[in-house]
Length: 462
Ligand code: AMP
Ligand code: ZN
Image (cartoon, rainbow, N blue to C red; front, side, top):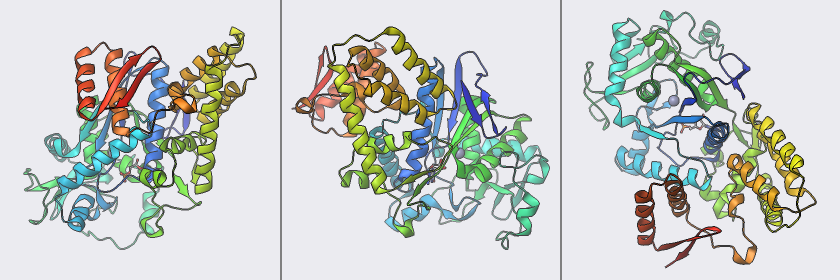
């Protein structure tokens, strides 16, 4: 399969570094607020990537971080720590803020059928690894100390900026007056920040009490779980010029070689063709969609209509029509489920081949979705075509396997419960009966009784 590599600016054949396993790192959320649908589009992209890789038989070791310290209001090391700012506003501790929004984030991604990466790494639980990384950089002469922290000296890396092709000198000429005049170069960035007394999140370090810079978090946690070189790194396009450029600088300075083989970036979601911002009141969340009677999966469906490297425009009209299309797609799938015709095996193989070509061509999901629709609309209704749709849905993630006639339709279920049911099914698949039973008991405590039937798992409220 081919994927587009931001670093080389071309589509490349995907070849794992070792055997059949792919090691992946995805920049995760900064948990100081609700994720908006723009953030969530980036995680839908991450999820589609996972699903396509698994479809191709790769084993995955995938890390996603939770940034619960160190991300300042400006990505370029200025302003307050985002966690601290919200904590002050809500009069809570930053840990309470992190715990609450992390919980909401996992509920949101479950509602969008986004699979959880194998490893979830919280920044605050990896401070030692970060300090060690910074120490290594200082020892090699890449870090220098100022009155407020340890900074990375980008002038020591001649190819700094290679991911974005940034023109640093040009940028400097037009730059605003530098806030921190102790920095040697305006693009030098904080590896470690010295904490003022009132800063709640702070840890001892060789440079006194402080907290890590945002970029070092990803470099240190990626290295811990995935080693000195790994296959794929993902994030949103806004991370290309600063965050990922700085991750590359840190890792290559310490290791003496690139850490990441393929860099992949998801394009932005626009709202009404413009930027999303708090001041415009258009940073919509999953709850906002639900409040308008929309199924979160209608948002997932909307995302599938655009290639991940193209901008996608969100409007309320667009999501309403995505909901209508999703309902029609499920109805069409149901007609095949109840179908009795037999369809030529060659036709099925051709649909499947076209679908696989699309997904393996740098995740061309819009093209793949077109093929799904051709299957749905196929005039003869056949159980074999339903099975094909279920297979294709292992990529789309639209719950085609759960489709039921309207009258039998089970009532709406809490995404958290749905996620537990999914985890139990996974445990059963892996013959982990103990875990499956534990999850069943937990659900019982939550008032949900499960029944394993020949048509799959059914549930009812006790
Ligand atoms: P943050 O929680 O701010 O670190 O952002 C989480 C992820 O959302 C990052 O990968 C960002 O690149 C991504 N992101 C932020 N805004 C948008 C947007 N409007 N559309 C798509 N992705 C976005
Ligand atoms: Zn990151």
